[in-house]
Every structure is written in C-alpha cells, then in structure tokens.
Image (cartoon, helix red, strand yellow):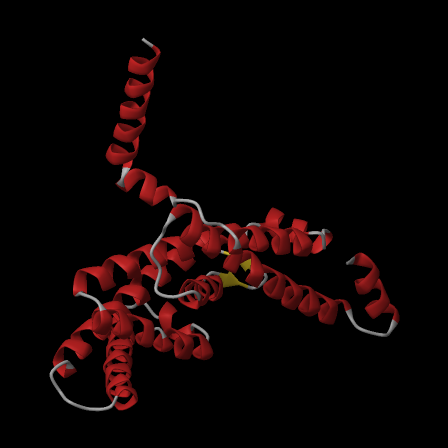
Length: 244
C-alpha cells in the first residue's frame, strides 16, 4: 500500500488527506475480517447471533464509541457499548411487549418500538447530564441513528422466538461483537492489514471453506458429547468382543 500512498502524495494530496485515506482503507478491509470472524463463530463454534450483520453493526458502533482522534480506547468503547446496548435491548422489549397484542402491520409497529427506544435514549442523555456525565451527548449523531436501527433485530427475535431466546441471542451477539472490535482495534492488526494485501485472498479462501463446511459445530459436540462418546465406547466394546 505504500506505493499507492506515495502515488497520491505525488499527485498533490496532503499528509492529512493521506491519513484519511488510510483510515477509510482500514475500515473497509476490517469489514470482511469481522464478517469472517462472525462466520467462524456461527458455523464452526455454533454461536447464536441476531442475523449476520447485527454483530457487524455493533462492532463498528463500538469502534466509533472508542474513537479518540486516531486512537482507540477499548475500555471507553465497551463502557458506552454495554450501556447503550442494554438501553436499546430493554426499551425494545418493553415497547414490543406493550404493542404485542395490538393488531397492526409490521413496519408501523416497528416504528412505534423505535420511538420507544428513542425516548429511552433521550431520557438516558438527560439523566447522564443531570448526574454530570456529558460524554454520551458528544457521540457521533449518525452513530446514534445506527444504534436505534438495532431495534429491528431485537424486536424480530422477540416476535419469532421467546424472550429468553431473544435476550440470550442478543448477549451472544454483543460478546462476539466485542471480541471482533478488540481484534480490529489493535494497532498491530491494522498495520498488518494495511501492509499485507494478501489478507484479502486469505479471507476469500477461508470463506470458501466455511461455505462448504458441513461438520458438527463445537457447541453441538459439547451438547451431544454424552451420545457421541457413548456411541464411540459402545463401538469400541463391540470391536473388542468380536476380536476376543
């Protein structure tokens, strides 16, 4: 990538503009990295998530929460991330519970749930301001819009499944997102991705393998370990009996 940056410098771009290009490149290259981690978590480990792109959205929300200039404050990101995640999750559930028995089309109902979440977010800003914590107000406003969009996967999980399933899936999604965020926020990871474009073909190969993966997930091995191991023991005993 140094060749490209030097070419842009020769074309008259300032170092500040080059830094912006580098930041955009890092964000773009980290997107397939995150989706690959999500794919491994879903198909190999067996982690339950609220769709494919919900953990991706939360990952980059955490990235925005932790942004301080060009650096990342992981603790700050996780602190704000957990707070806003719980606010959106609880407000989504309460709003959906109130509207659950109301017969109406999906999108208007989802809009009403979104209004409930927005009210909860605004009240949280007021309470934090009264208590002297003004940090949340200075979060990027577009980030808050993306945060409110998380209403849809939460409400959808509550509508299609049970409350416990929706909450457990949401928690698993956040944990996976936090892991992805920590990975992509590491300076060494960003520098490696910027300096090695071979990351792209490696991601392609990994995803081709994931696309053809048909084995048991790790969670399934743990869930059915008694059956699997008992069958193996039974087959071993039969083999020993036949040999004797």
